[in-house]
Length: 440
Image (cartoon, rainbow, N blue to C red; front, side, top):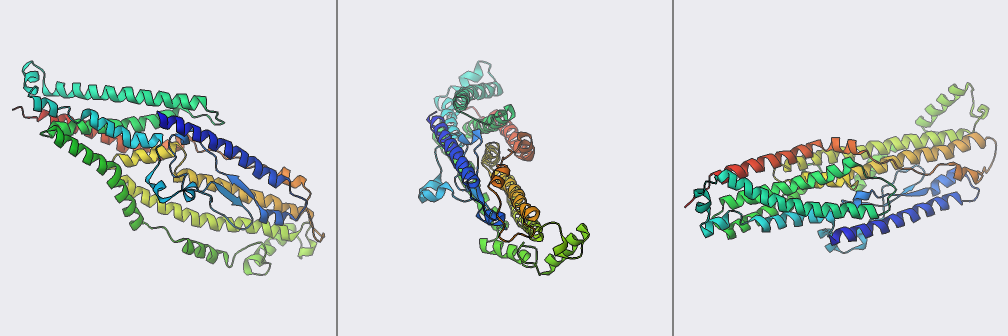
């Protein structure tokens, strides 16, 4: 339970840091002096990635993903300042978090509790005595399964009650829904049931406790370490991401002949000029009732944002293909679906990272559009126009809207289906294996 207490404390400190950094970033923006709005857009502002309360249970990829995004003119930037850069290579072996305990330690505990469920009866030759007394093998199997499951249930209740208490004593601006709790606890409990079934299955088939323990530990290594690592390597080989240089070159290629807000003379700018003149019913830029440069800057931001969105979506589609590989590997390891559902509900997975960055990009476009339209509406015929400081406070602060739990659960329905199949088939395999026990 120490991991829960430590994780709660880390979460509280991270929340305090987030609140302070967000407040400071907003103050820095609002306290600017009078200046050209587009210069202010280039200076930009910063948004800090928030933490969902369940992140204290599963940190997911947040230690490797950036926490801060600079929102400036003309360019969509990715999150920066990730925690892993401040640690040694040993950091990548993982941290002792609640999710680590549930994914790795709980299954090990179940193995040591149940590896000799049947083998001890065989070694002591008490199995025949039990069967002679009228107990069927199936009844005996279900009884042992219930006994181990009861221990699992008690351990799980202790863990989850402590988890809820830690959540309750923490200060949260966001309420975790009942669906979040059920989805989170349900997937981990199902995962533990799978190991319960597998441990009893191995014990029923093994000839001795030593062999049962060895096989069970081998399964644990295969399920939690080998298959996840292999699936990651296979997914990366089959569906690789482009290099950072290639990614940037592709964006630059699309931007080369498009609107950028500063080039008045290329073909795209000339087409936009004709469109504006037609809309306002005038023949020259000088006749426009607004500053044309502001309109061009605003339209350029929208155009460039569309290019960035196109290429970031291409990365997301590539990850979707990798995710299909992970789902296929879930047939061999229940670890995979549990890991991805856990991170998704904690809002610490790639899905959250992209959703947050997409929302920040929408805000960046609206943010820059407001600044550029201020130029269009107020800078007509004024050299060296500077906006008043009231403009900075008039632009609303970024307010991130969290992914809905319903949407997350819907997106991860395949993972839930896979874990249910694992629970069902491992239970049936356990019953079948125990029914074929030969009593000597």
